[in-house]
Length: 303
Image (cartoon, rainbow, N blue to C red; front, side, top):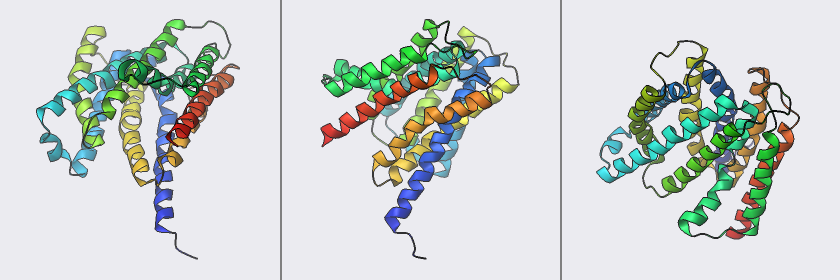
């Protein structure tokens, strides 16, 4: 039996890390709902943030990056503080409120429309132009948001909670703004993320004090928040960075992201016990169809 070509072996490792990332992402919507069943959304943010700092800090120590983080100039630390206030603080305060109001099968796919919001924000902030591909992608994706929003927690298609939909959509705008700002930052991505979460932790404490309290019940809700802190904010980032670094072409692993919302329906239905509404799959297909159109258009533009 012939040994694998080094490039092929490298790509297979990239796929392993990419699928590990997708599996992490597929579980977190269920973990969010478990957490928010017992915790206030500000309490959930505090637990997730603290756990993420520990997880990311452990990777920094084992990777020998802690000293490099300490040596960064003050301007980069200040930038990390600003980014940390955007993500996790503002982003997850909005997202957790959306999950608190909406069924997981609704909040989770809407969260994926941040990539559709990105070019429209880039038009406003960076002076970039919107092409027909982005326009079509936006129409498809936000039509999907309307369709998928018809689902309610009992699996019926009545009682749209537009306040929750609004929170979910606002979270996508915050994440798109964060992506634009973070993409212009230099340095090791893991260090940037750790510093952002570390500087966000005091703000999460303040948010918890102002919006809720520190009487956090030690039950399933805490474990849901811990799971989200480990797998949503910690391990998934590390796995995804390694997948991108190992892949010979980023598109080979990036396309796997489209499997996440479908895989997420399994724990939502089987573990969370949330009946899947008739409007969920058509709405999800419209949202992901918009993302595919956008990606194909962007690839064609790049040549």
